Amino acid sequence: MAEPGEAPTKAGCCTPAAGRDALPAAAPVAQGGGARPPSVEIPGGKALVGTDEPMLIEDAEGPLRRRPIAPFRIGVTTITNAEFAEFITATGYVTEAERYGWSFVFWAQVPDHVGPTRGVVDVEWWRRIDGATWRDINGPGTADAAWHPDHPVVQVSWNDARAYAEWVGGRLPTEAEWEHAARGGLGDVRFPWGDQEPDDTEHFPCNIWQGRFPETNLGRDGYVTTAPARSYAPNGYGLYSLVGNVWEWTAEPFRIRSLKRGAKARQAAMKGFKLAKGGSFLCHKSYCYRYRIAARTGNSPDSTTTHTGFRVVWDV
Image 1 (cartoon, rainbow, N blue to C red):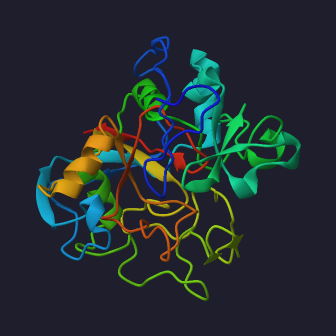
Image 2: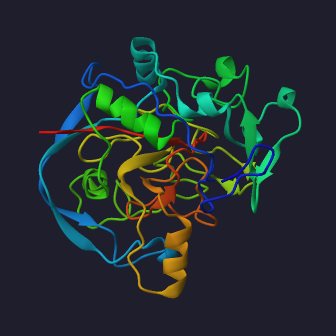
């Protein structure tokens, strides 16, 4: 655990882990008390999970597997700032970033008035910012510039995401449900739109990084941070931005299915971490090629960043 005054540790290249001391449990939230955001029904059947062409072996992307799943409903978009604000107003819930008093902000979004900051070991572009929350995304006084009602809510932990999901009568998706929905009925494809790679010059189907990471984001896809949750063309099921934009928390622990010594050591180092899918606006093929359906990462359930949100599923 990182003590106050120490630089926090990291989970991997994409998502810095807070490693904070446990907080007392948040006040319980009434389940099913909130209005359900727009959703679509996804047919059940044999869901494809993973890939036989893994790009990041250490993340246990392969092999391609088939998992039986029941029909379910899933949010058309990730939960937006406006939707999360309704939850806060109705319940008085206080997020973990607010209770801890700090969160992670990408270096390029740290405002000048914040002053000197501390970075994460080995990934110094992630800065610890006191007062960064779901409303003041990049630190105190940044809501007016950075907070947009139709953008995905960020700076929310796994625990925060689960509390919201229960409030609207749902839950976080399993990995199989998330991948099944992301494939949009196309089968074994790399991206929600098919297999054509995004690039830095002319094909911009999602919100990721263009340029040299972490120095220069050219923003050729239209955004250098989050895009509105309902951006770019939807997939075959009518779902938006399943890859890029923000990482999405899932219901599952992060597991590595391997007997190799290195994999076991990595799994041990990430004990208790939760699985996230989809990549974010900070992903680029040269650095974090995780904006693919089979890609995955893990983070501690208390961690909060400017590039992690969630969407909700409901049982049918």
